[in-house]
Image (cartoon, rainbow, N blue to C red; front, side, top):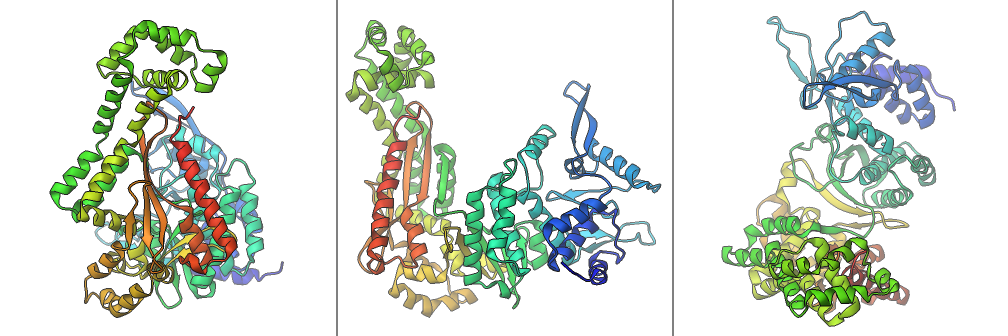
Length: 615
């Protein structure tokens, strides 16, 4: 590949803070890499150049000491890369700076460094909250602060993306040993790597690379078993990129920013703005579009322990429900109520047995029955201590292992009694649905929660906070192969039908301008949702008179005797409808309709299976 070296140097000189490129300055090297990639230089070539210019290798081991809780010195070690990303007073950071000065032969007095969002900053730069850089002292000897340039902020954002994309399990182990990884957002290391893959791929598209070439380069990273990026996320990233190109247009995108303080600031989005955007794109006409990235159609609005998730849900419903009805719902969703009901059912099924009966049934178990029911030695031990077991059941103080032991024994010896215990699994959802079904305000509040969690109001421009925070539009992207799918204004109109489209056309602009409250539109949408209190499905009523299951609410234990979890998840219909491009199944082909039927059946079977004992 041929390129103009002089042109690269001029461009590099233009974007460094003081106009004088310094190969010994790590931040200047980040900017140089950006210049190389922007001019079509192969990433591997650019990486090799940067490594050659680095004075200290990233994997150089830094040894340092810390004080343990008793005040004794404790020997520690980490890599140069991890050390330099710590706060300036951390022992690992101090040792790394000493090594850097020694390697570069610098005779200058060591200058402080700092870190934000996982980014290494140069020794002659001081950053305050990622938004300012050091300026020469004024006549009073006090430091003045000036805003960082857009180029600096974007480069810092892109460096954070690069680190997330290539983050390894080995790095994770080192970071955990030395105090944890800082400067990263929510989610898992895998999901962050996936988001970074979309961010990086979009910039590669801007640089003229094909989808095939982008996939090839991302797969080279994913094929390294030590990295968190995986093949599924790479496929999802390519599908997402195709949808971004279709909905926004790569040629219409000026800047790409991850959800970092630097990235937000660079394009004019308030760093404190609460948004579900995983990344932002700034278009050529100056509009900022927030993008929520989903790997596929398996999306959960709530997923986790019932106590925590019900608390989050109740908090969101507090402002949209009358106090007395919110209190009733809180009681119905109480984990303490679930535990009380479960203890009562265990007492009910065990009071017919004496300790001799429990021991006798245990001894009669065949090896095959023990294996099939999951009655391992730790549970057999509990059953053989039958007197203590029954006493705890009567006192409602059974341990988790004791509950599991009883349930597994009854699964072999008395199925009818086992089913009585299993009824406690549905207690939480039954009580929750009963309250929701008895209160229009409660149902309306739940429906609004679903809509907000789907980011419907964000996509329609009804969230005034986004506009105030510098976000002009919002779209959810699903990495569903082969070409992705999106939830935007167009698909939302298709979901709610022509009546809603007419009302939207008459009122939306006034709402966006702030001349009209969005409540009327929200009410119309909320009334389109219906909860099936038998199946737990959350249905959307289409204008074709069909009711489509888009979400489901489920409360279940991970196994009898364990704490329950809450799942408010998206059904396969939602993903298929977005992929097909219409929520009206009357317009689907027979093949698409059959696939939907098969997917819904498979999904229901999987959810039912989760309700069974987990070994």
